[in-house]
Amino acid sequence: MKTVLLFTSAFPYQGGEQFLEEEIKYWKGLGAVKLVVSPHTESGSRRCVPNDVEVRPARRYGSMARCAFGVRGLFSALLWKELLYLRRHRMLGIATILAAWREVSMTFLGRWRIASLVRSCGDDCTIYTYWNDTTAYAACLLKDVGLAKNVISRIHGGDLYEYRRPRSYMPLKRRFVNSFTKIYTISAEGSEYLIRTYKCQEERIEVSRLGVEIPNSLCQRSPEGCLSILSVSNCIRVKRIERILAGVEKFARSNHDINVVWHHIGNGELLDSLIESAAAVASKIKNFTCQFHGSMPNREVKNFYNDYSIDVFINTSESEGVPVSIMEAMAAGVAVIAPRVGGIPHLLEKGGVLISPNCDPDEIADGIRILASSGGRHFSAAANEQIQAKYDAAKNYPEFVQRITSI
Image (cartoon, rainbow, N blue to C red):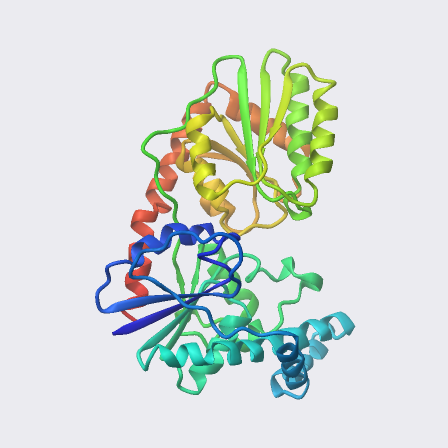
């Protein structure tokens, strides 16, 4: 039997990777192919997986192992080649040296951690890493010594875009990018970036879009004279949620005849300050209210579109891959305002308003004005059509599974 060994950050345990909740459904009942999922961490409640999908952890490790492989990394050719790259590009400094050393050490630790699990899967084993990180690099090292036939990897946003890393430096990516059997980007823009930035060989890259479940019914719009706005994200600096508040405030101040409600789903270090700022704004504007709903499991976020009328979804992130939150909003027939970053322009070809990467309150307010107008229903219908055409999980994931199992 052929085995596909999938390495994740936490899935099936809670902690992100919502797209895998959809993808995993299409790995059941494959007969001659068995999927084994190996999460790096195993904390929190466990999400459901099909009965014929096995969950098997790799070797655990502690501080002694980290220290041992830290020393191993110091004397490796892999590290010194990386340091030569940094020197040639005038990027050599304490911070980049430490980043390179950490990445090399974690790659060697990862090879030791997953080696016995890979061996247990037999000769006909394809390694599939959900992230293009040190576990993926470790898998390439095992492929080099014949422990795995193929190594394929998805690549998203934080593991792709170098500008999202401190000092715009992605350690080891150039060392390993042409060692993979296949790298699956989630957008055409991601493929172009991979070739342009890391000189990845074009034949190793394929675009495989992610997907979401298409709901049976679309989200209802608010009654006349009301406008309901939703944002879904962690309350962290890169998400720039304070810009959403500023844009919504500007719109509400200039449209006294519309009662504006802003809903936000998500927790994070900036949540308390956002609640305080939103309350201060709401106390000064009679036609504006806000509701913070905290963190929700993915299923509850989907149900939110059945329970509430939502007219506009807003994202103001500094950087993104292809956000599941935007895709789910569009699938529910909600028009979107989002910046031209990452894979968002490809996602939002229709069904919303694109704003600049360094968006300001005026842009956001103008976008709300467009989507709140009588033509807003056209954008809502177009959003749903875009997801059905290109990002339907029922189309994209069976095709992706077929690609991997046929390698």
